[in-house]
Length: 284
Image 1 (cartoon, rainbow, N blue to C red):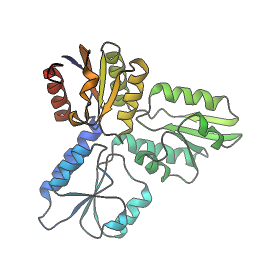
Image 2: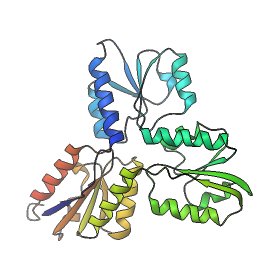
Image 3: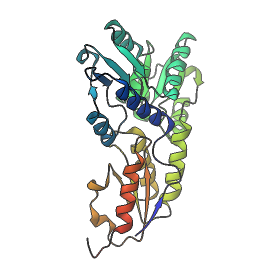
Image 4: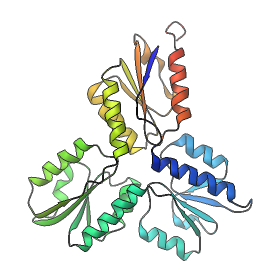
């Protein structure tokens, strides 16, 4: 089978930094020292399992940590969480993506300027949760159905979850613009790396018979890639790795496209491509 790989895919700089930071911390830790990560360091189970095998303990809350080193994942955390970690006297290593930190700082500044902060994004995503924890009054709008949450005749300061698509951001701004507000300030907080991956994936999926988007099922940027590709190629499949592939979808296909989310390691992509290239319908 002929396989084409998106020009832009796989680890972004923020994820690469988080992984390198984790590896460095683990390598320098004493044998008896516990190293924790507050939530999965990135949304990729293969990577989380690999780091876990070398000593990284993933926990859901500060309450689960009593001593040792705590790694702040690429998605960041709310200031209140950091205060609780400091109060316990824990050693904190911050691997928050610089673009996520920027969103947090912008949200705080907007609030200082008297705006009610509006985040266009997924309320349960850790990045958005961290930004929410930076301000007192905040509204999260995932899509148009959430616009009823906006204060009428309000002074709104709008930011966006970094991995949303420009199309969705623009569509939401248009919808908000038609609602009642007194003043509107918009800061573009989209990640350029995510946009490049989206553009590259869309261009590729139009040229292939079947499209595969590799990455964690909980990864927002990977899900977004899959949604965008599905809009242009119905034969699009979001998988974590080769083991999840139902090979019957390859029957009758000549050219396959492969892209991957910003938290998907190269070895997962390489393995998937190698298996695809070797696939023969006769062998199943």
